[in-house]
Length: 289
Image (cartoon, rainbow, N blue to C red):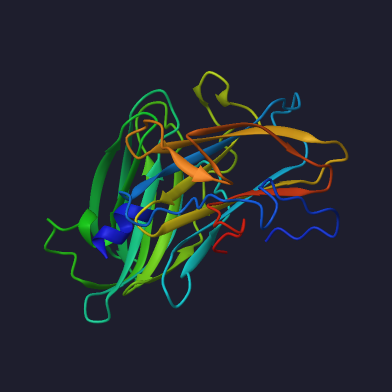
């Protein structure tokens, strides 16, 4: 399970549906390379233009990631969480039942952020507190039991909540995702944001991030893992966006999506009222989801 977390850690339109992919049956390339090293990180979707209010008109983002197996693809859907300085997650950990909570945190800021995690039992009593430093533009992912491994008061059997707060004088916001595991099965867990609106996504690099951009805190590729990105446009005119992928250490993550191998996918045009998908394709142009 620890390896899985390192890897890891809807939209319905009645209007037009468009897939940004090679038409089915015309692609002689298979994007999958299950023997390739596993890559894990995050993605940023940036509109070419945003409104003065800081929101790209009509942009809606969603992703699904999973593990390719002969019996199918265990998968989980993810909506982009709000940036937060104060959030809470449900915890249900049991070594006996192979249950655990995986937490992935992305720091989109230009400065490092200290994140404090407070674990409480179901009766509200605090059983452990720890602080994790998340470097600028990087991702940190661990199991809840790993976070408190050096604290005897935290046992392998605990049900309660995990509070996540970003510290420092500036209280810079972070992006948080929770993954609930039981053995090799997993699902996403809602993160409750208690800090309210923390403003737009900071600029990650030139042309990446900023007002109107969306951060997806988990992306996995290679070694049998695949991720599908779904980009929707509820507006009345076409919307052009770019997608940039990053490893956990903040360096570019190169993946094969829709027959193209890159870390940055630009000039993606979403039709008005439509949607495009980016995903690893087989030789028939089909994905795993």
